[in-house]
Structures are given as structure tokens and as C-alpha cells.
Length: 251
Length: 117
Image 1 (cartoon, each protein chain N blue to C red):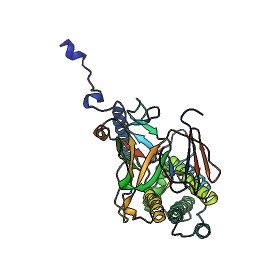
Image 2 (cartoon, rainbow over the protein chains, first blue to last red):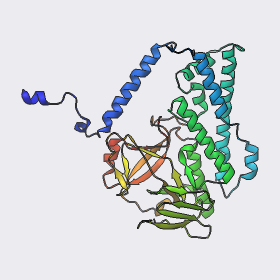
Image 3 (cartoon, rainbow over the protein chains, first blue to last red):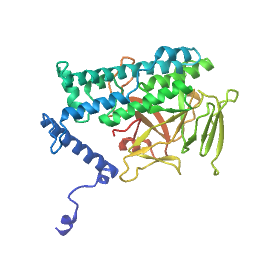
Image 4 (tube, each protein chain N blue to C red):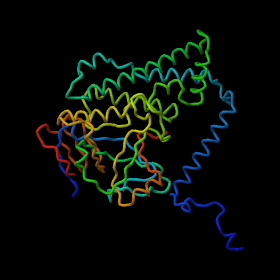
């Protein structure tokens, strides 16, 4: 009896061969579910002890977002610097990515400006605008944005920051040519970028693309300086991009 | 600089460097240069840079490794797009590991391009 009483009432995840962290994941998911459930029961969020009402908060937020998000990319200017080229599929990848980002930027800007007008009372609030309004007031990404966006589970604040980072990544690409280190998270449609790499390789060596695959090597080297166009310096590895050298992958 | 300093010379476009991946369910052990159990209370581990080189598939030398799926979000599911790709799954990357692949499959180890926060 005493022994049985000593047994823990909650099983640790190792019993099932899981890692300790599995418990944390489970608890996280449960709390998120609970909070999402509570949020559903609220038709309107009431702020207490604060003089600002929700309309002012949303209005400030929208103008802040509108201020932060840059103008759409000028695709025609970009196509002149990076024209469609048989030898370099990256130009096409860049252009397609920019088109997708432009669509998203346009959608966000348009919906926010209409929302601002609606709050001022200049136009009638539609169901769609109300949805955007509620999403922003609880810090979620409006559903209508997600239809044209890359998949993301981030809350509104981080979503906007992430979007800005992505836009910066591509702006940097436009200004300073192809980056030495690709921030793979930045792509809208990562698969097209990967295919672009394979296509470049296949066309360069005149071999069918379906025979080509990737080899990976993870390095614990962190980037220190990478601004020169042909040289990347890492703490423990120096990678020199050279047009004449062979392509052995003997790391 | 220590003993591991290497100088690599490559053609641009032949060697690609990726950055910005996270591991969920395991971590990258820098000393052993292998996949390892996650540390307690560390849910996501940022992978260092990955060198990616295209080549002819038939010439690859297989080494003991885990074929790790890469997703865009932690939901790990997506819809089929008109191009035939998933809207969430990106690709498989190989991560060196001594432990059997099935161990990591049960752990549900996957790589994510972005976190939820």
C-alpha cells in the first residue's frame, strides 16, 4: 500500500519513451486551447482602467503598421537589373518572390486604409472589416491576409516584424546582388528557390534535373562579416567563392 | 582560430549557404557534430548555417543520418498547391546521427523555418 501511494500520480513522459520536453509541449497546447476557448466566448474585449477605447488602440496600431511597411517593390526596375536568364534561375526566383510580396503588401495596405476610413465613419463597416478589426484588437493576423500570405502562426506583432525582415532580405538582394548566405525562412515559396538552385546546376552541367539532388553539411560556424560580394568570412571556416575553382565537396 | 579552421573555395551557386532553420524535438550537438537529444526546457534549437551543394543523386555517399523534414510552421501540415507542392512542407535535409532513424521519427524531430512567436 505504502509503495503504491509513493507512485507519482502523474506519469512522466519517459514512461512512454518520450522526452521530458513532450510534457511542456502538451501543457503548452492545453493552455493555448483553453485560452482560445475563453477568447471565443468574448464578443468584445473590454479594457478596464484604461481611458483608451478599442477603436483608438486599433487606429493607432493600423497607422503604425501602415507607417512601418514599405512601398511595393518596383518589379520593372528589378527585371532590368536581374533579367530572365537561362544560366541563372535565381533572377526568376527573385522576381516571382517580389510579385508575391507585392500582392501581400498591397492587400495589407488596402485593408488597413479602408479600416481606418471605417473607424472614422467615412465608409460603412462590412463583415470583412469587422473581422479585421477584431483580429487586430486581439493581436491576431486577420484571416484575409493569410489567404495571400506565406504560412505563419505568429501573432500580429511578430508577423509584421517577420514580414519586414523578409522585405529587408529581398531589398538587400536587389541592392547588393545575390546574398552569400540565404535566409531560407525569408522565402514565400521556398520550393521554387530550391528548384532554382537545382536548375542552375543542371543547366550548367547539361544533365537532367531529376538526377540532381542536394547534399547537406551542417557547420557550427557563424558568420562574422559578409559584405564583400565574393568573400564570406566565418569564425572557423573561410569560404571563397571563386569562378575558376573546382567543385569538390570535401568538407 | 583553432584547429578546425578550413579554407574552402567554391563557385558561387555551386555551394549555397542556408541560415535560419530551427530543430524541434532534438538539437544539434556542436561538439559531436551530430543530432542529439534536446536539453530540458529548450523546445527549439537553432541550427547553425547549412552548406548545401547540388550534385548527381547517384553519386551521393550515404552516411548514418536522419532524414529530417523541413516545415514552414510548427503546424506541420499544409495544403496541396497547384504546383504540386505542399504549402507547409519544404524538403528533407540529412542530419548526421549515430542513433537509429526510427528513434528520431518517434521523437517527431522536424526542422522549422520559423517559430510561432
